Length: 407
Figure 1: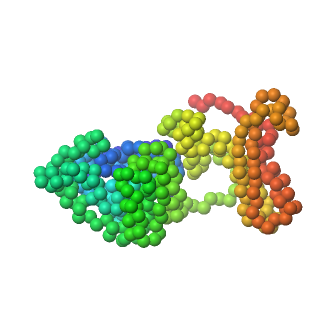
Figure 2 (figure 1 turned 120 degrees about the vertical axis):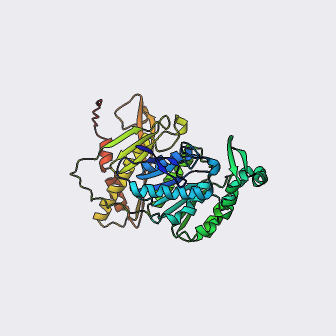
């Protein structure tokens, strides 16, 4: 997936460095991401969430606030208000060059800034906070032992995450003036609050205050076991999965898909390494984007299903679809089908009906549950139909795979 890097002019006239993660096809929506205090657009959480959302068709713009990363300006001259203003400028840039963001996402203090900026981005329909404080002044706790000196001297250098930053009195005065709860109660947009109960930087009570203050529609998702910065890849990818699914209710719906035409040529499936980890792959199937990986035990990061997971998932989906088509055509009282599958290797000698007698064989166990007032004969017939699904037939027939190198 392409990453477009550029600069735009911030509120203070400085050039701010930005990165726009784009999906391979036409974006379903655009999102704006605000990173945490003293962080940058390329922090692990910001980048992983943005890339994962792009894989799901959502373009994401993230940028370095004034004086951070590759952006111009002096961090000491920035304030919470200037960060909010720069977010509005970023939304303006998207509006003029692509399309205004319909999703706003903020991590930590960036979440507070997104809430404060939301009313100034009228096209935004969905707002997401990740580990956000309910009061921007919470950030002063990171350098509480210097607050009195900053007020007295006007400017003091403090160490944050092992790096030196100069904090001015104006920063303290500005952040104290913001009444974030007013922004939350007057949001008038869908809100998703995401927070880890184990967050020891911004406590879970902050999420409670934000959620209680907000009006519906609002949602809360616990990022269980995650730390404040979402340093584990699985936590960032989980957050992206939830955001994409939740936001789909509020962004413009995609055009309805055409009815399946079995005479049409099959869509190409393109699998490409992301190079984010040893086994991580992005799978493109028409407008759909999926992630494949291997479990941690196999040397991967478990960022997505493995190859055999996809294989048996295809069989499971085909089985359920085939049974549904038959049940509907015959007006059978089938309420729901659940197919549970497992792939394993077995010794050939343990398979009495198999022609192969030596070595190992692949075995797929498929358990089918059928809900509904079906009698024994109907259940028997549906089980017979399950074995007639096209993928089942493919897997049990002779398969020819033609492999060639591309220029």
